[in-house]
Amino acid sequence: MKNVLGQWGPEFVEAKLAPLVDGVWRCELDRDIYILKRRTNRTRVWEEYDLLQWLKDSGQPISLLLRTQEGVPWAEAPGGFYILYPYLQGTPGNELGVFSGEHAGEMGRGLARLHQALAAYQASDVFPGFDLFHDVASYAWKTVRGYSGMKFHHRLHHLQADISEQLVNPYEALPRQLIHRDFHPGNLIFVQGQLGGILDFDRVRIGIRLFDLCYLSTAVLSSGFSDPRKREDWVDFVQALLEAYGTVQPLEKTEGHAFLYIIYLIQLLFTAYHLDNGNSTLADLNLAMLFWIYDQHDYLRPRLEKSAAGQF
Image 1 (tube, rainbow, N blue to C red):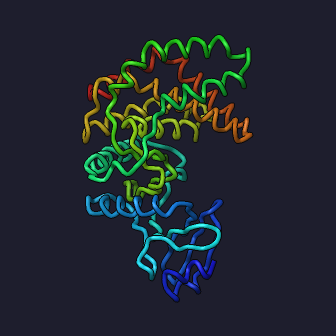
Image 2: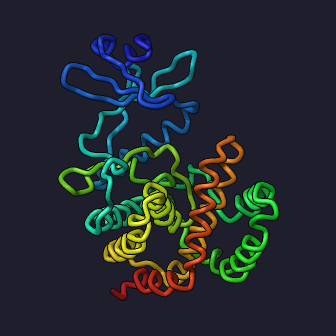
Image 3: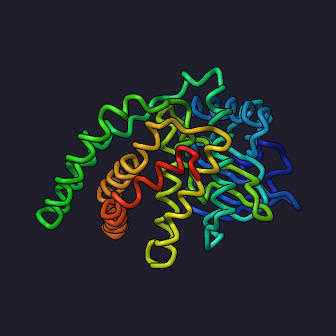
C-alpha cells in the first residue's frame, strides 16, 4: 500500500494504515487523518470528484477527494483504484446510541439542503438511474416469496395488493433528481449535536427524492429495532425528520402519500439482498421490520402525511 499512498506525495509513504472495513483504511500522517478507499471505476471517481467540488462550493459539509501528483483524484495499482480524502472529525451518527428530535431535525434539514444542491447540479445526466419500483418488481418480490414460503404468504399477498393499488400511479409522479442513495446515520458526522459532515457519495444516482428520507428512516429503525422503547420512539423520530425536511424543502402531497409504501419497497429489496448474500439473520430482521410497520399502517399513515405536509 505504500506504493499507492506515495502517489499522493512522498510524505504519505510514512503514513500509518489501519483497516476499518473491507476496502477502507484509516490513514494517519503526523496529526492529519485521512480515509483511503478502494474503487473499481476511474470514470465514476471523476464524476464523484466533480460533484463533490460543486457541493463544497454550495456550502455542503463534505470532504473533497485529494488529487495525486499526476493530477487525478485516484491512485492506480494492480488491485484497482484508490481514493483519499481528509477524515471529518466528529461523531458518526451510528455511534449516537439514541436519536433525539434534535438529531432528526439536523438530519432532515441537512438532507433537504443537500437535495437542493444536488437538484441544481448541471452535470446530473452523467449519473445512472435507479428505479426502486422496478428493482422490487423484477427481483425482490420473487426472492422474498421464495424464502418466506407459506409462512407469510397471506401477509405478503395483501401487501403486494396494497402497493399495486396505492403506489403504482403515484410512484410515476414522485419528484426525481440526483439522490445520495446511502444516506444513513453511519454516513453522517455530528459535531456538538449538529450535522457537521456527510460522507460517501459513490452511490449517487438519479432516483426518487423520497428514497433518501425513507432509507434514513429504515436505517434508524434497524439500529434500535430489538429495543421496544427505541422501536416505539421511531414514529416520533420520523415525524420530526419529515417536519424538519419540509421547513427547508417542502414535500409534495404525493410524497406524503407514498412515504410508507417506499419504505415497504426498501425493506423488500434489502430482505432479498441479504438472502442473496446468505445472511438470513439480516433478512429476517428486515422482514420483521416490514411487517411491524405494515401492521401499523392505518395508524402511521395519517400522522406521517400530516408531518410531510407541514401540519405540525
